[in-house]
Amino acid sequence: MSNELIFIITVLLYLGSVLLLYKLYGKNGLYAFAIFGTLLGNIAVCKCVDLFGLSTTAGNVLYASTFLVTDILSEKYGKKDAQKAVMYSFTVMLLWMLGSQMILLFTPNANDYISESLSVVFGLVPRITIASLLGFICSQNIDVFLYHFIWKKTGDGSKKLWLRNNGSTLLSQAVDTVIFTFLAFWGTYPTGVFFSILITTYLFKAVVAVVDTPFIYLARMIKPREE
Image (tube, rainbow, N blue to C red; front, side):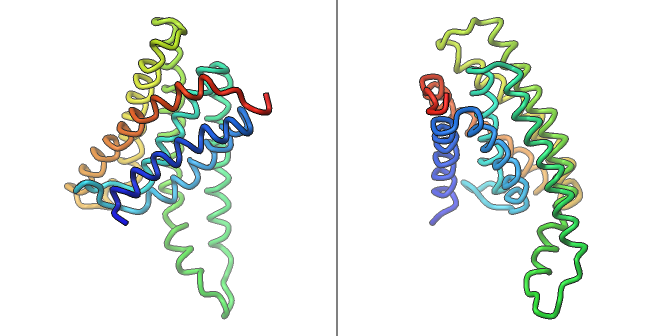
């Protein structure tokens, strides 16, 4: 299966999962996806892949999907609930960073066969997670602020929903991409590859932001079971 086909499938899978969790569990389902997305995204971003002839990371789709979560919360519940999703994810990422490093401190016994692999993955966690934490907390708060700023300027009708959804997400993800990419990858890759990753990371996040537009319209119509 080609990377391009996997990309398309994962976009639909993750955005669809946001709506499914919202339908089944309401706000708690959205909080759960936000935490899941930030955690797995921190691991997936370590993998460099080629998409449509461009170098990028495997974590872009998953991480970009979390912006749909905060936009749905902003749209249906308000700024305070959207900010809760940001803080829940931020707190769990801190615990994830500390926990993964504690695992590496254990001395493996003679029967262990996975310690070296964990060291490779978890050894990148502090730098990746700190970069992600800073990018996440800045960009998600900007996203929530811009969403409500655009909302106040244009009204709360569904006609301008696409504008507050895309406007807030595209601008905030630009901030996230610059902060995260420089802190996580500067000096790790050759300069040309680094700037290719920087540009394509934002490009693919922007694609997800545009594609998620019909999903937020669907979310506006959903009545969760638990509410």
